[in-house]
Structure formats: structure tokens, C-alpha cells
Image 1 (cartoon, rainbow, N blue to C red):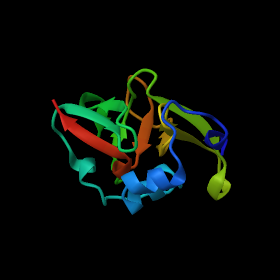
Image 2 (cartoon, rainbow, N blue to C red):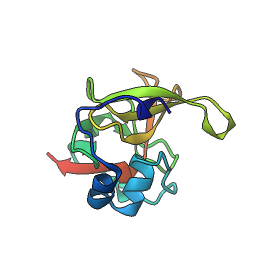
Image 3 (cartoon, rainbow, N blue to C red):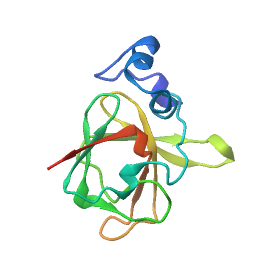
Length: 135
């Protein structure tokens, strides 16, 4: 994975990540895992506010960019500028675009070209990788 060789502004040892993240957050953010669809309450969050990285606190998405995709994961049509980076993910016998936090490198999910206008993008994000702060 390309993120393994890059140095990010927020860098911690594996032990430090394990001490600040829940086991599920660690599996997703550091282990490139995926939560079960429909398992996170943030999928249903409709209040105005900001979604940030559960690993480092970087603000990633604002609530008015969130939409119901029917996939079981929080979906957004656009991240905040400079908040995420993308890499090629060739796991599971397919080519996808992985989305990770530009600040700590934590795996957030994937982006697909089947979202609503105006971007046409669907950032399909693991809710466990996010924290929500109401406006």
C-alpha cells in the first residue's frame, strides 16, 4: 500500500495507535479494514456539523455534502479541500480508489464515480473512522 511509505504530519507508533483507537477503529484506520454495512450510527446522522478523522481529528467532510447512498456507509460527494488523499487499491481482485486522511494516513474508505451531481462522486466512508461534531 502506498500510504505505508509516506510520512504524514501526524505519525505514531503501532502501540500508540492501538492505545488511542478502539479495536474496530484500529482495524479500519490502520489495517485498511471495512466495517459491516449499516453498523454505524453516523450513517444516519442528519444534523449540521463536521465529520473528522477518528485517528487525528482532522476535519474531513461537512454534513451538507453527505447523502444517502443506500450502501450502508456514510457517503459524501466531496471532502473538505486538502483533507483527504487517494491511492490505488488493488485488493480483492479489483482496482478501486482508496481514500485516506491527508494528516495521519488513516484508511477512511473508497471513492466511486457513481455519486450525485455536481461532483458525480461517492466517497463511501467507514463511519467508525469518523467523529462527528454538531454545528
